[in-house]
Length: 116
Image (cartoon, rainbow, N blue to C red; front, side, top):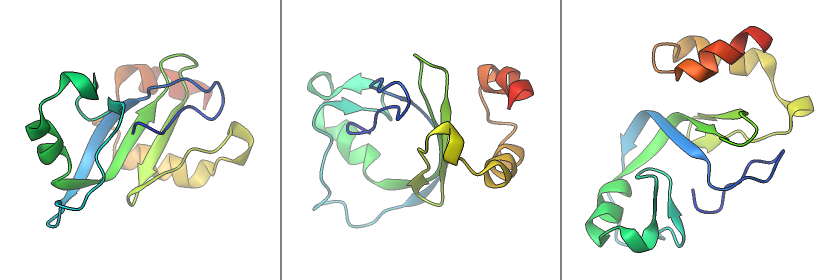
């Protein structure tokens, strides 16, 4: 999360909404965030190490990244953040994603979907 910025407006950090996770078992060699923890929405220097261990014990398989500057959102599908510019986005795939997770979507995203 601490290397992801909005591809359209370059805003950092992005808001993370987690929908589904998988357990990760080998976390000892995991690279920790350097600047910002999206999961805890906090600067790393303000977090105890135990928060990193908690965060790195799972892999986010499905979720949403939201830019609070330009209000764009980007799905995380099958562990991969899909952060493409508007003209390259896959409407069919993203519509299926939104339908699957409609109960967990933030109200602001649901409101903006009328223009999607």
